[in-house]
Amino acid sequence: MPTESSPAAAAFNPARERLVGLACAIAVVAIWTGFSLSSRFATHQALTPWDVAALRYLGSFPLGLALGAWTGWPRLPVGRSLGLMATAAFGFPLCAYAGFQLAPAAHGVVFLTGTLPFMAALLGLLFLREPFPPRRWISLGIVALGILLLAAGSVEAAPGAWRGDLLFLLGSLSWAGFTVMLRLWQVPAAAATVVLAVYPPLLYLPVWWLALPSSMAAASTGAILHQLIYQGVLAMVVAGFLFARAVNALGSAQTTTITALTPAMVTLAAGPVLGEWLGWGGMLGALLVSLGMAFGVAAPWRRVPAVVDAPAPRG
Image (cartoon, rainbow, N blue to C red):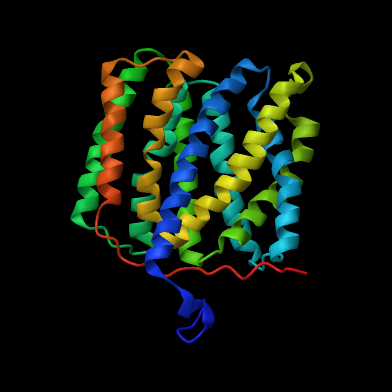
């Protein structure tokens, strides 16, 4: 952490940091929207959940190596690296991919990202003692009502999808744990991204190759490239870096409130893209989630301690 007299501290601009955090969080919403649609679309591409995960790790590995070479290798204790990997690299994506095999995209985004502000708020209150002003409770209440309407509007269209919903909730809890770890340990965005991009493939890919069900041979080249690029490059590396940067700038509560916009975006896109349409109740739920997110972001913002990444080496 920079001291008050260090150049990094002197250069810290709260207004600029807030704008950077907001921009990163909004970019995460866009990528997570595509993540939900792509993960659900994988069920039509002759790929098992284990195959999609393998493509995620295959895509992230070379970029993680390049980022580590550019910024320097992260010096995180083994226990902290394992904690970040267990939640963000394994818990979240594996539960999501398996859940999308059992439930529609609207379910996934409601329970994966829609519940994330609540999961992160609870864990932040327990482990970080983060302040939770009344305005944010109102914001989460509006989001909760929207989530209930979204869920009610989609359950009728997909009876029996509750098994996928449970997996989505577990995935949401995993990502909330990752969010709290970022704040608790003050992990720089670049360091977190390298850990998540490089180490998990070394653990997962041999197991997938030797023991897990695969239908990769039946998938088209286009399907493989699509999931490799979106899951490995965008969802894993780019979104992982942007999310960590947003948490460092805004804190976990406000960042996850912004990402609660994702259910509305996926709900609007799932109809024309996947043919999974919701009724008026679901559409009203999407609107309420968006309004709740906007109300929470507009709440008075208090500066949080920032993590300043070390300058990238230029040699």
